[in-house]
Length: 291
Length: 140
Image (tube, rainbow over all chains, first blue to last red; front, side):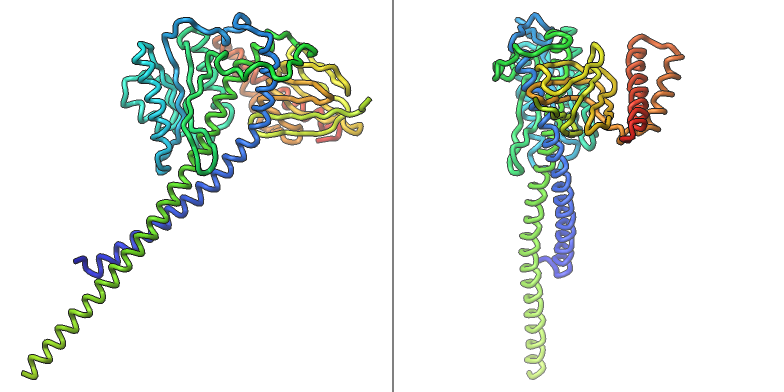
C-alpha cells in the first residue's frame, strides 16, 4: 500500500497540473474570442467578394483567364494543409492531418504527383515523415498572421498553377462550425470553375460599367479570390485550434478534479488504516504487559 | 434625387469605415475617378493612391492599396487589401520605407525586385501625401 507521504505528493502534483490546464483553458478562450472577431471582421469582405465575382463570372468562360482553365489531364496536385503550431488541443490536428493524408494517398494512387504546402508546425512534422514532396513548410506562423501570409502562399499556388506545375489545388483546414464543433474540410480552390459560387444570383451584371474591362477585372479578382480563400482557411483553423484547445483543457481540468477526489479518498483510507494499526499495537502491548 | 451616398471601406482584417458622404474620389487603375450620388452602377479595379471623400463640406483622405470599388444603388463599396485613414498613418514608417526604397532603387538590381521596390516606393509616397492632404484640409 502506498504510504501517506506518497499519496500526499500525488495530490499536490495533480492540483498543480490542474492549475496549468485551467490557465491554458482561459488563455485559449481569450484567444478564441480574438480569432472569432477576426472572422467576423473578415466576413463582410468575403461576402462582398463572392457577390462581385458571381456577377462578373456569369458572362465569362475559361478562355478569359488562365485560372479558369480546367485541365483535361491532372498530373500534379497541390495540397495546402493548415494546422496549429502547438499541440494540447485534443484530436484537432490529427483530424486535419488524417484528412490531408488520405487525400494525398488517394491522389498518389491515381498516379498523380502530390506537392504539399504545410502551414503550421504539426502539419510540417507529420508530412516530413512521408515521401510526399514538401514545397513549402511554414512553422510558427499561426501565432500571429495577417493577410500578407495568405497573399504569399496564394501567390505561390497561383504561380504554380499558371506555370503548369500544379493542375489542381486543394486546401485542407479545420472549419470552425461552433465552439463545440470543428470539422476538417477539403476545399478545391483551383481550377476555379469547381468553386465558383453558382450562377450569378442577381443577373444584374448587364447594367454595370466596368473599368478596365470584364477580362481585366477578372484578372485582378481571380488571384485575389484565391488569397481570400487561403486566408479564410487560416482564420478558420486558428479559431478552431483555440476552440479545440479550450475543450481539451476543460476535460483535463475535470479529470484533475476527479483524480484529486479519488486520491483524497485513498489518503483518508490510508491514514485511518495507519491509525487503526497503531491502536492495535498499543492495545496489544497493554494486554501483554497485564500478562 | 438623394444628395448623399453611402461609402463603405472594408479590408480583410477590418471594416475601415462606413459613412454617408457627398462625393468620393478614388484611385482607379486607369486613373482617378469621382463618384457623386446617383451614379450609374460601376465596377473598377483600384491602384495605389489616395481615396478622398467629402462630408459636410470637409475633405477626408484614406490611403488605399489595391482592391476594387463597386458602385450600385447609391452605395460605394471599396474592397481594399490595405486601407488606412489619414489619421492612422504611421508617417515615420512611411518615411523610412521611402528612404529604403530609394536607396534600393539606386543600387539597380534585378527586374522583379525593381517592380516590387517601385510599388513600395509608390505606397510610401502615397501614404505621406495622404496625410499631408488630410492636414491641409484640416481633417487630420
